[in-house]
Length: 269
Ligand SMILES: NC(=O)c1ccc[n+]([C@@H]2O[C@H](COP(=O)([O-])OP(=O)(O)OC[C@H]3O[C@@H](n4cnc5c(N)ncnc54)[C@H](OP(=O)(O)O)[C@@H]3O)[C@@H](O)[C@H]2O)c1
Image (cartoon, rainbow, N blue to C red; front, side):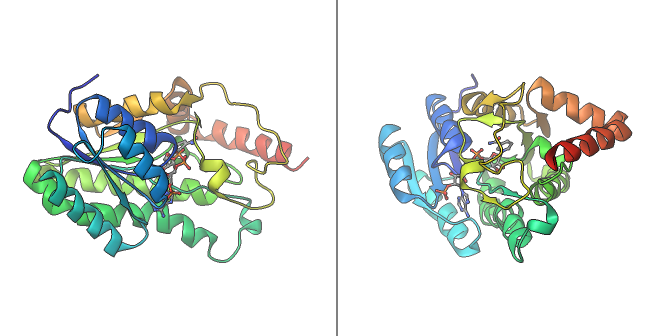
C-alpha cells in the first residue's frame, strides 16, 4: 500500500460504499481525509472513527451546488493547510429504459455525475496547482458500453471519461495528474438502492439479479483508487471482467451489439 503521510485528501461521496472505504484506506495510509457527502451524521461518525479533527474532517456538501463545493475546498485548506488529492467519487445511478425515464431524470444524472465533478475540480484547482496534486475521478466500466436500461448512467460516465482525458492534458503543465478509475460491478455499495430506478430497469427490485462474476468489494476498489493516486496513472479499468469489456468494445463492437440485443430480449420477456 502506498504511503500518503502528510497529504490531504478530499473524498466526495464518503458517507457510504466506495467513498467510505476509500476514506478508511487513505487514513490507514497516513493521509488526512476530508469527508464530503450530504449525510452529515454518517460523515461525523466516520470522522470520529478515523481519529477526529486532527485526522478527519467531515463537511456536508451537495456536489451539485458550486457554492458548497467551494466551501468544501476552503474548509479543507483552512483546516489542514493545503490539498493534495481530490477523489471525485460521489455518484448517482439513474436506471430505466429511455421511454420510462421521466423529464429531468437525464439532467439529474448529469448534474451529479458530471457537473458535480466539474464544480469540485474548479474549486480545488488553485490548491492542486500549489501542491502539484492529483485528481481521481471514479467512473465506471459502463462508460465504455451503453447497456439497455443504463443509457443515462453510461452516458454520464462516458462524458466524465472524456472530460478526464482533456483535463489530464490541460493540467499536466501545472504538474497535476488526472486519473480515471473505472470499477466494474461492486458489492457493498448503495448505488442501486439509492438511485432513481424507473420501470423497465434491470435494477428494478422486482427483478432478482445474480451477482455478476468479477464483482469486486468496495475495499478492492478503494485499494485501486490509492494505487491510481500514487502512480498518477491516467486510466485504470478494474476487475478482469472490466478489462475484458474494455478490449471487446474496442476490437469487436459488433459482438457487443449482439450481446446487448440478446440482453434486451431477455429483459423484455
Ligand atoms: N456500485 C457499483 O457497482 C459501481 C460500479 C462502478 C462505478 N461506481 C461508481 O462509484 C461511485 C461511488 O458509488 P458507490 O457504488 O459507492 O455507491 P453509494 O454507496 O450509493 O455511494 C454514493 C455516494 O455518493 C454520495 N452522493 C450522491 N449524491 C451526492 C450529491 N449530490 N452530493 C454529494 N454526495 C452525493 C452519497 O452520499 P449522500 O447520499 O450522503 O450524499 C454516497 O456517499 C459512483 O460514482 C458510482 O457511479 C459504482
